[in-house]
Structure formats: structure tokens, C-alpha cells
Amino acid sequence: MDMNRENDGTDRRPAEGGCRSCGTLSTGLSAALSDTGCYCEACYLHSRTQEANASAHAYEGFAEALVAALDLREHETGLHSKRVACHTLVLARCFTTEAARLRDVYWGALLHDLGKIGIADAVLLKPQPLDESEWMIMRTHPEAGQRILKPMPALDAAAAIVLCHEERYDGSGYPAGLRGNEIPLGARLFAVIDTLDAMTSDRPYRRGVDFDTPKAEIERMSGSQFDPLAVEVFLQEQATSGRWLRSSVALLACHERPSAT
Image (tube, rainbow, N blue to C red; front, side, top):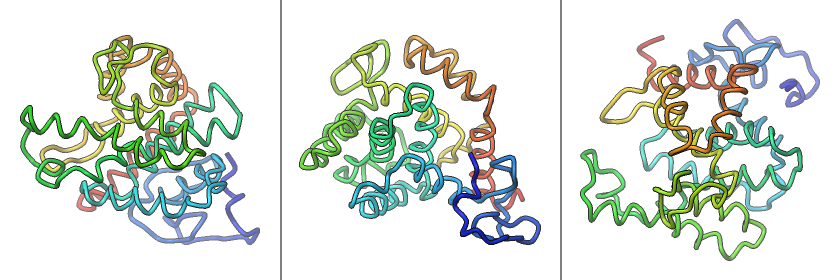
């Protein structure tokens, strides 16, 4: 992707370590996200958003502000939802170039945890493992997210991804215990990316791991938790153009762990 198309045509020459798109200096700029130079994670993800034609929706700004608020509520970086949406989009482009379908995947992945807006802090933010009654509450969030999106027909396909994003390929997921191709493709692709992002991100109770650990776990769970085709595409993308994965992980580490820089 030519990241320079986000620029205004002028020749920006930021100081060493600066983002080639916005010019901002940041200690988080530790990896090149394209062949032409370094970009901060926010500019990189913005370019992916534009690629998905997400701006076609008049409510784009509201939805992105909402998921950013949810990310902050869960003590995420504020970019978690957009990051998993954009990376799911990378996998989806292996199956289609149709803008409308790609847009549905983007919005479904972006809004996947929308239903958690109704989960009490005592459950959502509990630092200890949830008990069975708390898990019953937590497992209501896919259906709650779908209900929130129901009044917006343009997001029907995205709402299906929201509803099914906790399903597992072998039928052991929730809320409906769907299996195989009963699960929307976007949700099957998202499951791989969400696991990658969850394992590489810091949590209050643990540090994030390096890329190779979730990669091995994703391969191991192919055919049970994950669609083998989704895993195959993930591994193919990682092997051929995988810097978008490794670089995002590296950038996230820098943003969340300034003491390591």
C-alpha cells in the first residue's frame, strides 16, 4: 500500500524517528510499516480504515468514538478495536475485493465488543477470574451488541459478525454453538486476529507475549477454535507480507511499555 496517498502532496521530511504521514515525533516509531518509511500506529490504522471505505457511513465518527471509549473502559490502548478491525480486513481481502463486503467485515470487527457497554464494571473490570454467574453475564455481550445495531439496516452483515465473534469452529463457542461455515466468514477471520491481539497485548494480570507464541497457538487450535482456512490465510499473509502483524505488535509494545524504549 502506498501510504503517501494520505499526504497532501507536499514533501514532508520529519526528523529521524518521525511519522512520514503526520510528522509527529514518538518513541513508539520503532518499526517501518511500509517500504517507504515509518508511520505511527494511528496513521497506519487510519489508512486501513480509508481502504475499507468505512467513511461511507455517516455515523463513522460516532461509532469509532464509542469503541474508543469502550477500549478505554477496559483499560486498552484506545486502538485495540480499530487494530483488530484493520488486521481482520487484511485477511478478508484474500477472499474478496468487493468494497461493500470489506466494509461489513471492518465494521463487524470494529464493533465486536459493543455489547459490553451494558456489562457492569464489577464484572467487566474484575481483575480475578470470573465465577460461573459472572461468565453468564459476560456471555450476553454478543447478543446485546447485535440488538444495539439492529435499528441500522446498513449494518446487518456487521451485526452478524458481532453476534458470532465468540463462536468457535468446532461448535464449542457461544451464544448459539455454531460450527464451521455456519459462522460468518468475517467472524472466523476475526477470531484469529483477536487471539493474536489479546496474547500480544499487556493485561493488568500479565505481560503480552511475543508474536511467535500466539502464532504457534493459532496453528495448534486450527480445526477446533479456528477455521483451518482462516489459519492458512493468516500464515500465508504473515509469511509474505507479515510486517503489518509484527510491526503493529512492536509499536504496541512501545506505546504501552515506554520504559522499554
